[in-house]
Length: 72
Image (tube, rainbow, N blue to C red; front, side):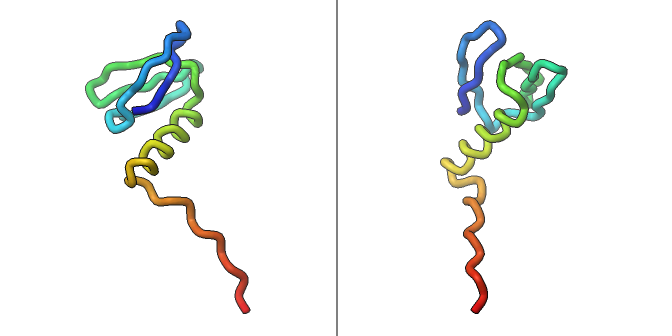
């Protein structure tokens, strides 16, 4: 679940696994797989970052790539 803010200022949790699309119209619209739509204050980039962090916490997204060590 990710926390988002509706345009009214009310915070809600959305199941990140059910997000089908996120688009800026210019308001951000989250569409779930059941076609339910949510108009939120966060940008599409913020939503993406939250989904990635959620999936990392659930172990369903690769961790950040390790820094390359200089060759000797």
